Image (cartoon, rainbow, N blue to C red; front, side, top):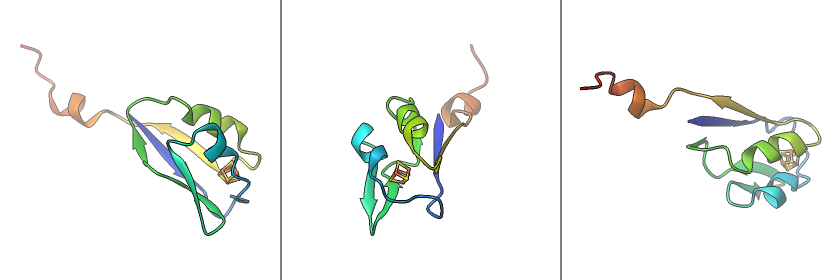
Length: 74
Ligand code: SF4
C-alpha cells in the first residue's frame, strides 16, 4: 500500500497532478487534493509526485493491512 501526502501549503494549484493522474487528483478551491489517500499500486501517482513543480506530493510505502494481519501461512 502507498500513502499519498499532499502538502496544501506548498501546492500552487497548477493542475499538473490532475493532468498526469486524473484518477487520483482533483482541484478544489485552487488546491490539489488526492481522491484516494491510500492506493494499492502507485500507477500514475509516481508521475504526479515527480512532476509537481513545488514537490508538494510525497508518496510513502506503508505496510499492507491485510498482509500484516495474516501472518500465519498454513
Ligand atoms: Fe499542486 Fe503540485 Fe498538483 Fe500542481 S502538481 S496542483 S502544485 S500538488
